[in-house]
Amino acid sequence: MSARQDIMNRILSALRDAPETPVVPREYRTTSDMTGEQRLEQLVDRLVDYKANVFLTPAADVSERLAKLLAGTASIVVPHGLPQEWLTAVQNDAGTPAVHVDSPEGRLTVAELDAVDAVVTAAATAVSETGTIMLDGSSDQGRRIISLVPDRHICILREDDIVEVLPQAIARLEPTRPQTWISGPSATSDIELERVEGVHGPRTLDVIILT
Image (cartoon, rainbow, N blue to C red):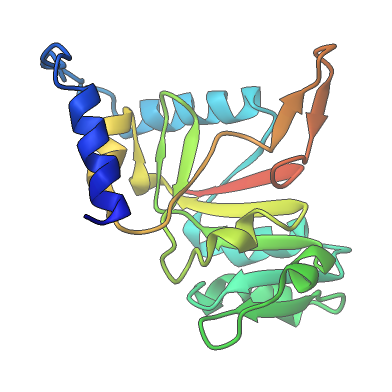
C-alpha cells in the first residue's frame, strides 16, 4: 500500500461517522434591474470611496487621457496585447516614458517590474455593487505579476463590461484562467488601525472608464 493510499484510508476511517453534509442553498441573485448609467454611477461611487482615481473618458480620447496621466513618468510596463492605439499620444509626447512590453516571449523579471513607475492594463469586467475590477490574464491584461509589483496601476475599463452583481461577473470569466480582483489600491491596517497602502500591490489605482 502506498503512503497516499494509507493517508486516504485514515481520512475515510476518521470520517465514517460524520453526519451527511446538508445541501447548501445557492439562491444568488444573478440578474440586474439597473440601467447602464446606474451601474456606472454605482461603480464610480465605490471606487472613489476606496480611494481610487476615476476618469470617465470617451473611447476616442483614451490615448490623450493616458498621456496626461503619465506626464512626468519615466517608465511603464504594458501587456503585449494592450491596444496599440491607446498608447499613440503617450509615445508621441516629447516627454514620453519608456514603454516596456511584457509578453510570453519576453517576460520581465520582478526586479525589472519593480523599477518601472506604472503599469497600464485593460480589464475583463467590473462589479458595481462591490466596486471590484477583475483581470483574467487575457493578452490586454497580462500576467498577474505585472499588475501587482509596480507602485501605480492604470486600469482601462469599458463601460459595457460593468455588471451589477458578482454572479454576473463570474459568468463572464473563464474559471481556468488566472484572475486578479481589485477593490481599490492595496491597503491594510496595523494593530493600531493605521492605514498603510502599497503593501500587497499598487499604492495608486487610476481607473479610466471608457464611455
